[in-house]
Length: 528
Image (tube, rainbow, N blue to C red; front, side):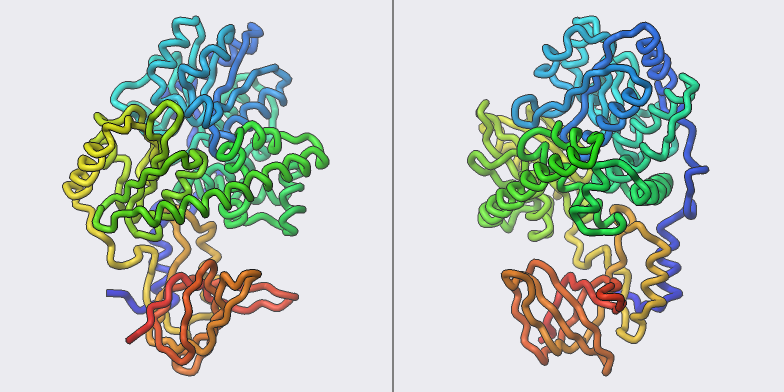
């Protein structure tokens, strides 16, 4: 049953999302609440004092790229030389692995960012090579934890840091804060916060508690930033300011595309550009990667959709030589289209099936696949997103186990979109509504943009727009009140005069100095 909404009811609902109220940077917990933070800090300080060789090992997604960038910028700022490596998705695989060890032999201290918590074998190799290893990671712990000098991960049982949902870049930021205190130096932590805000949004961390505070202040810093990469991005997107949507929909995919299509070090090079000319050239390269990523992903998504078994609770699709860099996005697209969790696998050179999974709704995909771990070669991730590899002969038993785990987990298909907050009459759509919604920004994971449903609405107009007619422009009427709406990326055809129930979000459209309200349409259900 959908509740009828008033502004007061909506405010109450949005307020309930923030049990602790709105936190600010003053509420940030101290770095030493992380288990092993002090131990790691002391070891790094002693490495700096003794001029030891330090190597940073990152990861190829936005969180890993920004975490690596943060550590590199910090060591540059204190003028201490370090090496850094981001493993190549295609040649090295994920994170600190046996493949990376030959490249770091001779290192005294290895420091992982946004990876390492499942690197049991690689940690053993580090020990044999006499390399001290500090792991900073935020992912879930496997049954066996690597042996390391220090492990900073808020998901460890004995960790007293009060927030479980933080990303790799936040932990890197905290490590920098801890080092700053230990070295007793003056550095501007807000200049680092702007990069952290990008990672929190890109890594889909819930935008509540300290995450919200860090994103809000990070975005403020981004909008004052003199960082060449940020200036180049603003110039390219022809925007005055950056919003959380700009990060989620434009900047994050650009940064991600380097690791997806070629090598993530191009994204680090862009973020660490020291002048606007370099930043522009490096941004062009990322744009080229992203354009290639889009076409590749589109082709594979179409192939994958054609293979989905609609009776399966979890869609598992295998492709031949599909591009490893885009299978995660394809899994997300298929999951959304089929409204069920999805795993996309592709064959690699070693004859293994390798791929990514994305969840749907409240389903815990990590738990479902974790119970089928015996069929897998490699596995990691969190509730909403996983990475895995398995032998081809294990596929059918894996598929059966996953279906069984899904059924036993009692995941019922949600009949109603959980993001719909209630039934809204057109009479309640006003600037008062949008200014109330602005109070609870930024929206994203864990604080989704409120979606509304309006019933018995007449479609007055539904015209195609866009270069290839891939979007729709609507006029709707309800009890004599007319609203304009748009629906992106759709080939649906609607007859004017028909009655419909519509699901949408409300935005303000700023155009040539004029502000109007418009509906961003999610679904149109024709009433028969």
